Amino acid sequence: MSGLQPVRGTRDIFGDESRRHRHVENLARDIAERYGYSEIATPVFEFTEVFARSLGETSDIVSKEMYTFEDRGGARLTLRPENTAGVVRAFISNGLTQQLPAKLFYSGPMFRYERPQKGRQRQFHQVGVELLGAAEPLADVEVIALGADLLSALGLEERVVLELNSLGDAESRQTYRSVLVEYLQSRRNELSPDSLLRLERNPLRILDSKDKDDQAVVANAPLITDSLNAASRGFLEEVLKGLEVLGIAYRHNPRLVRGLDYYCHTAFEFTTDALGAQNAVLAGGRYDGLAEQLGGPSTPGIGWAAGVERLAMLVSDVPPLPRPVAVAPVSDEQTPAALAISQQLRRAGLAVDLGYAGKFAKRMKRANKINARVTVIVGEDELARDVVTVRDMDTGEQKEVALSSLTDDVARFY
Ligand code: ATP
Ligand code: MG
Image (tube, rainbow, N blue to C red; front, side, top):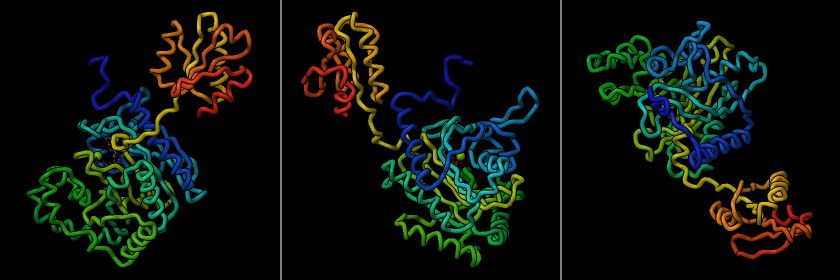
């Protein structure tokens, strides 16, 4: 225990980094709103069962990565490792199933016990969307377009690639499952212990394994694409057609899977080569079986989640903060007037800096240091005439301004 250190895999976010995070989150929220999504905030902890039931006991997240604890009342709780399960749980608990489609946006911290490295933390943040109640390929297109819009708004269009695959409908996955199991059985002595377990319970998940030996086996596995039935092929074609209409470039990656039982049809991931091994920035897919799995009415769904830390690291041009107005009393006697003036300007919506003490020369130095756009100089003689001096910090030009019109005069600099 080292009380003054943050817990391994967690970070304090402040200053420039905080601005980057906020930029990502605000853009995501604004763009989601443009697509008709409204924000939902679900609790950061849920009954463990919510995640166990939705992600499956053999998933990496449930078997290795969850922060699970018993509270003082004996309830088994888990800090959310992702937010799809929580949002779908909330969708069912709140009766949102009556007004479809439900279009929900979220933003907030997630928790996974992983080995920390660049772009991989134990507490990290995601923004994401979930669209519930639309089974049509057009919904997949719209959700992907929303993600693509966010990435272009962040200036990342050239630095990411959209990879996409189809997992097909239940029938196609059943066909594929038998083909895949047959293949994996033939090489079972090369599989990791984890994957041997998955072979019985959820073979598709082996395709998603991070284990090197598993990956060597998976590299030669039959492709799900070859097991898709006509309806599933048709669905995929519609999605691709939509992306083409929108000019969204994609790469069909027949090896991309999301190894969870309820995933079907579209699976996609925007990846980058700028973050080393942590190459996925935004990932999602269709999960038509999830609501039912959680005990709600059968409802189709599709969504994605993006890692805020990973996106924040990639963006280069975060909009600068507005330059403040500095207010500088010439001597201590003018402090009350300077205080009142600062408040008046803040109420008019301007960012104002008023130092707490110091000689006039020091206050002017500070105005320079904080990159003030203008400084309002409050002097004794001027106050007596109900005026102050406004200094343009870029040109050095000064002029007297009546107190009664100060707000308008200062606002003109912005
Ligand atoms: P990875 O393959 O990198 O482990 P994942 O498949 O576990 O990612 P998802 O569950 O799809 O990730 O989560 C969506 C996004 O959240 C990822 O694309 C990534 O940007 C981000 N993310 C996931 N886990 C972490 C983490 N531990 N730290 C930071 N960001 C993360
Ligand atoms: Mg992971």
